[in-house]
Image 1: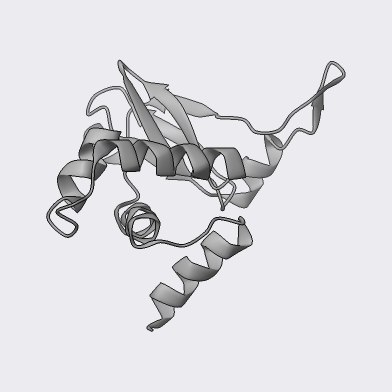
Image 2: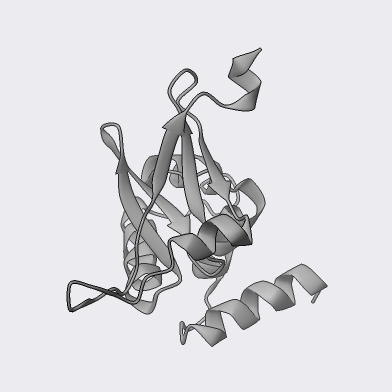
Length: 138
C-alpha cells in the first residue's frame, strides 16, 4: 500500500468511517481533484474505474462523510456541491468564471473560527467570498 493510500485509509478511520473500495475511491477523488463536485461529476469520473458504482452509493457515502464531519455540502448557484472538511478552510468564488477556490491561509481562516454565536454552539460554517479570481483579472 502506498503512502497516499495509507493516508486515505487512516483518514477514514480517524472519522470512524468503515473503509470500502467505493469510499476510498470517493475520498481519493476529492483529495486529488479539489474541485467541489456534484454527485453527477463524481459519478462521471469514477464509473470508469468502478463500473458497478451507482449514484446512490455516492450519495450514501457523502451522507456518511457529512454526518461524521469529514465533508460538507453547500449550494453553489443551482447545484449542491461537496467538499472535504478535514482541513479548516474558506472559499472564494469567482463571479466571472464561476470557479470555487479553497482558502487555507491560517490567518484568514482563524478570523472565522467561531465556537458560539449569540449563545448558539457552532458546529461548522461555510464562508464563501466572492470576487474576481487572479486568473480572470488579467
